[in-house]
Length: 399
Image 1: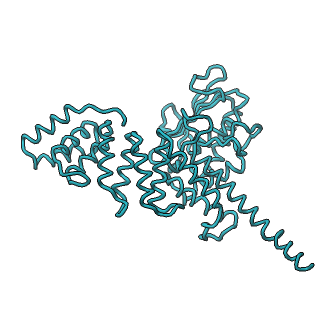
Image 2: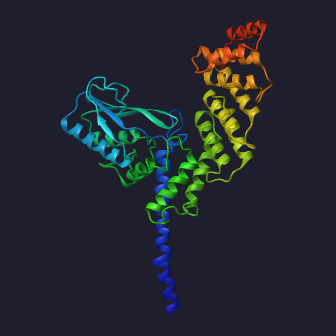
Image 3: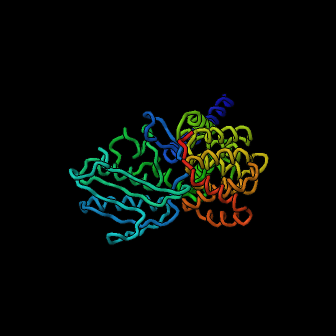
């Protein structure tokens, strides 16, 4: 009898809390992914998701400017929410004065019945800009006097700090189906704090960010000591993340290319999945074959940056040419460099001169200098041929 009681006590005091902690970790990690690493993409079916392509967040202090009319209570609440979000993100805030004060975080108010059509029925809109995951500017457009003002401000503020998702089944201000929420929820706070931790950086790829977030959350919950190993935790959540990316990568258009690049990076670096050359190549080529120049350029850059045996100069040149033919200026410049060095393609200084010229016409830094340096090794006839090719260039449609 005592043995059975001891076993029952072990189950109650040991296994049950462990399972509860694991479930809490999995829930927090899943919320982080769906809020910070997935978004509902314009043009996709309802509920379909697009990977952000990695972490998006601020890296510099916020210079805030407010424009338009609103009540003192509305402004007071907005500043309260802004300061709360900034404190969670450990970001400094400076509220600027003046009509044109060099702000990077603009907030504009509109009256209930005088709002422009860009503001949706919900009452607010957040527009964001970022470069390689580093946020550079945010504009929040807010309809004053709306019954949804409180919830709208909370939601727009999270978008303004780099959280794009709308997981409707989560207890979050980002959910469109949860009502009566008047402050950031536990999921909102945890995700924002995780997003701005020093171990998570702008542009961090999807699965690498998930690995970092799992470790951070496990440490916060006391499941592992600081610097401990979290690889055995939340495996189902991590596996589901890979499944989602794979499903998205097999689609079409921008969402598919973004997901495919994320998987290519993961398989090349061993981010959660094991390092696998064939899969890294397959997903990168899947992204490149989608026909979108910006992703063909990214794929080419990865093929060139990888070390052997993953590096593939021929594949890089192949996708650079596709992107260059579609008028991608940076691809023109990089393709010219390969042709001028004989890397990935047969040495062709005439073609290199032509592409350098086209890149220079599009103001790519260094292109004009590279073209002029190359001309010293070309005959007058070769330079004339290269200039003729550049003049006859006509951008091709996506393919």
